[in-house]
Length: 487
Ligand code: NDP
Image (cartoon, rainbow, N blue to C red; front, side, top):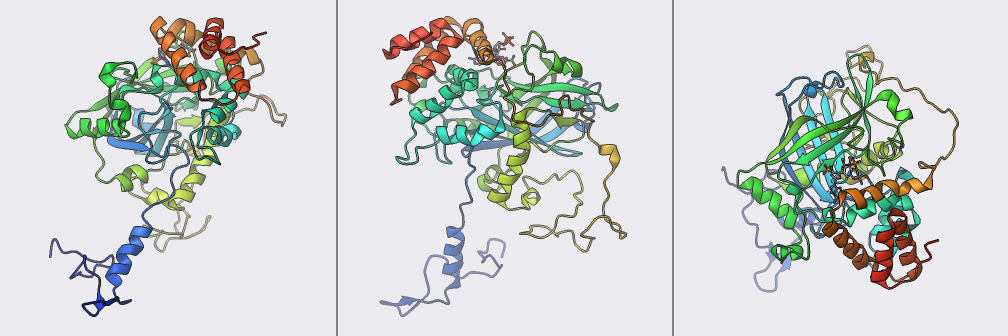
């Protein structure tokens, strides 16, 4: 009985490898062979819609531990005690490639964490870079279309990617970072994670501090370099990062990151030298130093890829009391788009799937029906307000008040001074990268640009890099043997 094969309906099966036919020789399959129809019917429906971005990923369970008191800044209960641990599920991914694509492509990596806190789930849906290509969410579909396969050839086409990037110079900082060594991390354990956006931390007096989240790998940053003989063969393994993470944890080892924040006093935001809500720029460590406050440890592999890694659904809109959005225009757009895409991918009740369920709290609300996996609210009232004991909101959970500084309505560019697109990438190129890294970034960019079919696009891209640094632009033009008007 214990190991008996059954149908989806629990009926014991007597056979699974032979269809039922009328006649032994030349027999026709019978429509009463419901074992066959059920088996094939399930098989045909196994694939759910692929994530439009971040399709290829790996996941692991672990915990977050508080290592420093942050209650002065944030009232979130999972942060209210040094030593407190909160269960976490992490998913790492590539942005552009499809579900079966290569782990070792040059691409931004996703770094998404679900914290199962005692006040519901907080998702930190970040990347391995502290910035991104765009400063306004409305540009996201164009960015991704340009980086995905060509509509006619279905080939990955550097011409479209460089056409978009070079026409939208705010992307230069992220493009430069992508073509440094960090553009191909040596697996997911050897990269940092960043919340990237600015968020609010709110304390129990409702005082707001702007915050950026950083997770620094304890294993150290390591990158895959095609020129390094140690990496021979690695770049041919499409599952390199997934395999590394899974095997590391299967061998009873932990993958760990130290958690830091940068904190900016509320009023600084209006006078800081850059727009602190612009996702294409960082807050300098010199202005807002990193403060260590926690540790992320991953130590358990999923038992089922589809149920856990594929069906996990993150959303930057999943905040717990004490963490709130900032006016970052890309974050504001993401607050809407994740839930909408999960509705499409997993249907409306996706938060009831075990991997997504905020299992440490009791979920009580007035959402009903759809495809349900739970008791659907049993016999409780289905409307609010009601006189029959349904759940009520509590004003104590109001978000902090936010005063608009400008009440005009319009479509305003994020960056007013276009020169500013190039200041921070210039700092990265000149002050952060070492000479050998600078040489590799030039080789990596030139290698990619050499596949671009349009000289006009090449020249525009090189001109942007010239604005970053004259030497960078000049060297690229020489390497690609192209005349660029730098005036
Ligand atoms: P810092 O010298 O204090 O910071 C430089 C940071 O650059 C390092 O701490 C490291 O960040 C990061 N870094 C090192 N190598 C690379 C690389 N190959 N690709 C991407 N990042 C790298 O100066 P600032 O804070 O003033 O920043 C200077 C420039 O550094 C910025 O314009 C930006 O381009 C880049 N940067 C800044 C970060 C920030 O949050 N301030 C974060 C990452 C990059 P980490 O410690 O996170 O590994």
